Image 1 (cartoon, one colour):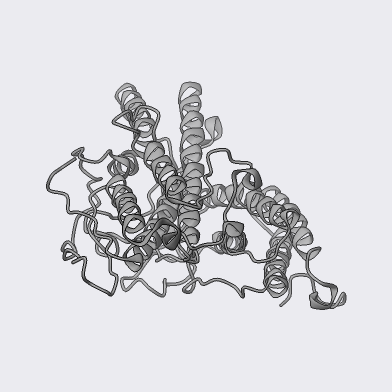
Image 2 (cartoon, rainbow, N blue to C red):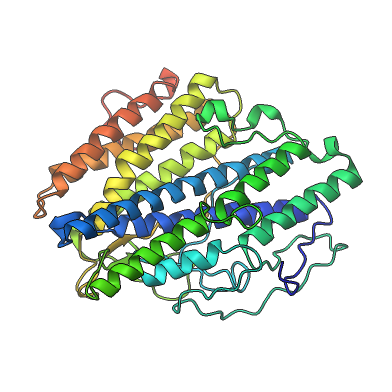
Length: 440
């Protein structure tokens, strides 16, 4: 461990609560960064790649997507930790970019297409604790470090940590200390009923958190996958990104013109409400339509997952419906839409740049009502809105040869998901049959 790294202070439950909330935001935003880079990767010969280059890019796409999926696992693990101590998980987060200051001074986040800058940034974020490594040259520290927290402070606030592993080791120490001082049962007050289980998620690596032992296992799982356990990082996120970077460097030496990704620029439908500096806005009409569909999909994914992690009296079958909807939305709707978006121009203000999905947050995201029936009614309504809008976009004239097929498949999946959600809503809470499908 680097002795200059400040100690994480957890003097009471609220210190732990805010650190877990920040960890959940951080994992969420890191996942978005990886998905953005993966969306930007080119598609073989149709994008001008040689056979060897296309094979490499396909390998990288699979690896980055796999790491992004593991970041989703980390989100689930942190959500379980929060539920276990009595806190409600929430997937709200700030908009990109967050270059310096929202998180600790050294933790800076932005959406970049796959390439040297992105890989250097990913390696910096995933580096093992105590390892010295520079962030990408675009990421300059502009904020001062947070002042150290005194254990006697009653109001919680953010703390400094140099690496993600440093944050989680601090959380683990805090869990031990609180359990020792307050008693384990007094710390883990959450109901086991609300835990996301490996059986429900069909994800053996997921850990249900009900006591100190299972909490420490969950924390260690996150550390192992990110930086590696006890310095063994070859198969962890850090090691996998390092192998990609080395192969990429070798291919650049062989062909300095090699460009594995489209020049995607994170661009918004409107100026983010929580970012003071002007951000790129999409003006191309086709790109705006696809970006809106991707935004509706992303919002629905978060809403569905929030219900999973804050459910009340749902049956296992209903929780399975929610999870199936979330997975289908991610793989069959957001993935193709996010990828297709990177083939479209941002607009005349950004010549030569294509549109990258900015994972736009339009408001401060909160949990829905805790009551099951109205919560499902709202999710189903949003699902129908997405399906209806997808169908509208399919019907609109497009000059882009591939988009009708992409949006058509997205529409079909969105309608199936909306129907599955609507089937769980009591008949009296559904819209009238004569209502336009998807209207609110």
